[in-house]
Image 1 (cartoon, rainbow over the protein chains, first blue to last red):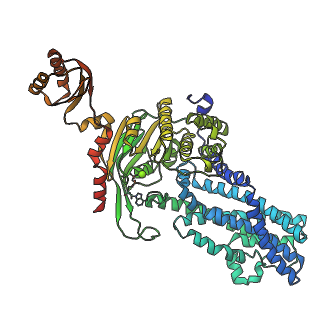
Image 2: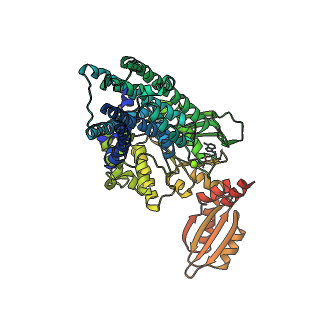
Image 3: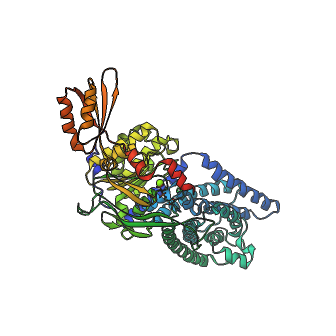
Length: 286
Length: 346
Ligand SMILES: Nc1ncnc2c1ncn2[C@@H]1O[C@H](COP(=O)(O)OP(=O)(O)O)[C@@H](O)[C@H]1O
Ligand SMILES: [Mg+2]
């Protein structure tokens, strides 16, 4: 057995701060980006199943003779809903799971803040889900022959709406991830309970305006709601009465994104301290 | 890892009167305000490990070993006292401490099964800011050193328990830590894998004198094989500390020796019984030789005793000192398994 070569022993200049943070983020994003797409079975679970769900709604709209664009709404909703599922199962529940596997301790022991790990999970999840969403949108639109009326001038706003709602959504997921560490066993139950109602609330399958101002106002707290509404307004102009103008929605989304990210950082710091005092970072001692 | 100049007289690992109390977990309490029973896992532990040492912390299940390691690795707050790595407080200089430590636990399931071994190690290297080029060179060499070069591109989920633990060791070392914590690293491994882990730890230590290991184990032979210094912990308190030889000798009332003789005459026995310093002399006849076991008041009595046996015409073939095993020393200190269970019962 040889001793480490000069190359391997080369004292790595101590990487710190944001640079280390980015390396940490990329490291953690890797399993989601590369490894998760290696096996083709995701196409079935993450594309075929959502498409089926979209089909169900699409056929209802077809049956009642709604305009084709309504099917477009549903397809958009279904595509965006992939992000919500990803946030719930792969962000909010993730730290809980990482604790069970022992990863949480190793992540905490590393010199970067745990926030960068969460950022990596979010980044990887977002990109991986974006691939799925694009496939869902393309296939769905082809299948039902939906055309979109997006004007070039609306493109920047669509991009912003999309970005801000994703940042907000993943910020919310990170915040939940920390809070879930407080609860030990109930997590999966919570997940089950909130997944479908949120799909409904955020208006994935019906325009959010149809829910009435109170429910819609509450639903607007979930960044997906306004993001989806804004994108729908811009992609199908004039199709339905406007709840809040898209420009406003994008503004609110930006605020939500900041709030949730700050909230996530706060929750994480709080939980880490609490967990260290209470001895809750691992489950293995029993 | 390039380190700020660390003076050599500062211990690599130091605990000063460290205490840790857990709230016993009854039902579910949020925020931990529920009054309830407490468990004192560490009750004022002080120890100090010099740079370059492999230090063994020995104790039965529940003695407090893991709790102490978690405190040193910044994962758990001490309820009292102070824990230091290279003179830096683990609760105040968290990042600096984290930059130079690593930990491997027995039965560790860390990482992601869908990654290959190489990808997994690379991922952890990223968390420590190791540039990819350096990381890959290290990964190659670490894997070769623990005998798993062939598994480099295998998926983590497909590894056997033994291979997995070798990988975990590489995972800890890929950041080139100065202080390594091993919490029962060979628990549940087969003989070959345990040996691979122990061998590599020893080799790794020999490659750089600034490195330090704190190992917990309840396998005494493992501690005996790897450690220079050990401490025994029981119910959250250190009950002994020293070199393994100190510990073994400490419980020997008399110096014991075993001699093989070519032939035996009853006169020898009489001669021995009358001698100063001889507490006990037992013989055992074999076909071609006689085994003589001596208990002496002190070690110094052996030379004169051997001399007078020679004078009496005895032919001594071999002579060796009998030392108790670390296991025996350990049992003397903390009681045997049955006692431990009886204690837990009341
Ligand atoms: N997170 C925890 N919450 C409550 N009690 C704990 C926790 N971790 C350990 N203990 C208790 O503290 C004592 C010491 O445990 P531990 O440090 O794991 O011992 P060892 O590693 O020597 O087996 C045991 O009685 C154990 O049950
Ligand atoms: Mg333990």
